[in-house]
Image 1 (tube, one colour):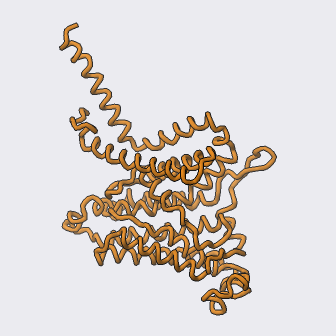
Image 2: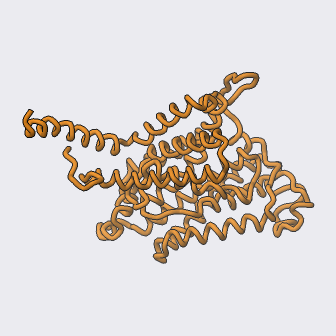
Image 3: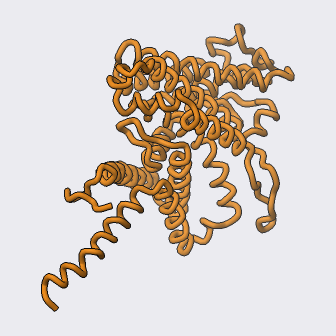
Length: 378
């Protein structure tokens, strides 16, 4: 066969390959496919990964992290980052618990700066009240939103770098949470509050015991996801978030109130962090001053893996869910392999790095270039 005939025969193959590469990389469900493939491959070697008990654990792990990633997503879309989410979890966890607790051990809390003023051996000011749970949760959410407001004002009005502002918040409120509890967990929380994170809707038999089907945290996660989807996809304010993230100067020139949009993003992030605190605190059965200390990597990692851009202007609710799903499955499989904690962190870090590189690759393909430079034929 003549050489020109070979070139002609290979050309369609190359175009199909480029088209397939572009279609796969740019698919909104790309991370979902990865999560499913990863789960099925690991399941062959780790049968426990697909057991009813582990699936129930995966389900209960997904929703609190999903709530946090949704909040982080709004900040990333406007081109920022919120490192203070973990400290918001800690401070709201202990504040809510101190309000609702029905008893504190004097031996542990007598040196508490709030002892005798707000809390005592009989618990917090809402101890035993029928309004303890709703009021406690509202206070937690309000504190989270107010911290987010302070972060947003510092970033938008004072033009301070988001990394620095939220880093300072992280250290300040983490330390404050330890100060007001003397690093002690606050227990004796109302049963109704514990039910939010520990109870399930429906159970199935698994061996000699039963496991839960749908955790109550599922409903909080779905409600928040719907609200976030509606704001970003069905309102003008949602378009403003993307516009600010893509080009803040152009958004300002177009008449978009960029400062208010940025402040709103941080308020939403703080609110979501507080909601995540409600879910984690109720699940763990205590207000913990160190709550969230090891979750920051999971939040940012799940967001990046899901495809939410660190450069701003790009992110969807379902991407956040896919990223959380992949990250939770990855985390579960790594611990089932009995790896040491530092090995787990190394693997997680490597996966996040690959996800960030993949995000760069997808952006280049979306702009019409292959990784090596030539233009992709559509």
